[in-house]
Length: 348
Ligand code: NAP
Ligand code: ZN
Image (tube, rainbow, N blue to C red):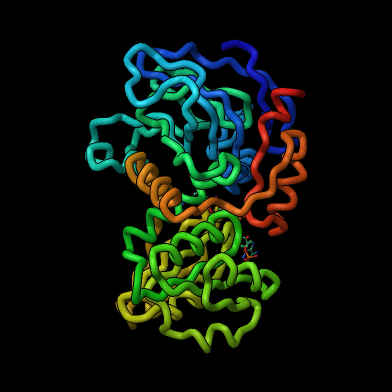
């Protein structure tokens, strides 16, 4: 496919603008997808602005992709034309290392990101801020029939990135889970942990989103701008999910863990604070991190969301509103995920 419409950043300091890309013709094991919606993740901003270093421009961001199958390769078994499908942060991996064998493709040293990465054939990957994409069958997900496409898009990154650690650290009945930051990832963490049966507390900068937080499934909501929060909640949580995209004083939060509790980092600021050893040692606490989720677990998460009727709370935007959406996301002014209606780009 030639001259596919897309939006790209040409360098770290320019706004995103119209761009055209080519997509390969489907190989035997490929699925061609007409993109209907794409979620806007904070990682898109980090990479479009080269905040982590190593971005290769031009970048077409977008790894919360949903759409409809328009063509399948000759050996494709799981999908047919017309199916509703999703693509998340990965489009390939080595498929034979220990992580791949265990369905943890995100930890494969040779995994291929949906954008800002290089395919095995040497071509660059371009993401979902575009009208169509071609992806290997084994990296394409099925979308449950009862869920709306626009609300599902953010599940492909924000959903799986929070589902995976909640499962790994066994969130469920009898467990107290705190979520730091009520943004795209944070609001999904609240919905999913609540659906798993855990007791959820939100730690947000202010009390502005308290009513939303309770509606999303939290039983308690605290402002981190109030120092009393950190005395009141000492030694309270089994698990803290940290979704904040900027540097925070982790020591304050580690002290909110019970004995043997864990704080899992999901947000990826480019600088990190010094951790005080006693905050970990007195209480045998753990500080951990977690990266998105594997393909099998992503399908499990989508099916879990289908069963529980869970989608993301979204604000639908047109493609040409993307730069404004980035600015609003940086100010925390989004409830709770921007999703691009790709019809707007197809028509443009
Ligand atoms: P987001 O929608 O912008 O949410 C981040 C939230 O952090 C904000 O809504 C805000 O919540 C809080 N926050 C922002 N600035 C803050 C500050 N100065 N102090 C304290 N809290 C602040 O972003 P997102 O899309 O959820 O992504 C969050 C982070 O996760 C990003 O760094 C992203 O790159 C990363 N990420 C990681 C993975 C992974 O695999 N580990 C996957 C996807 C994304 P409140 O207003 O409630 O405080
Ligand atoms: Zn993401």
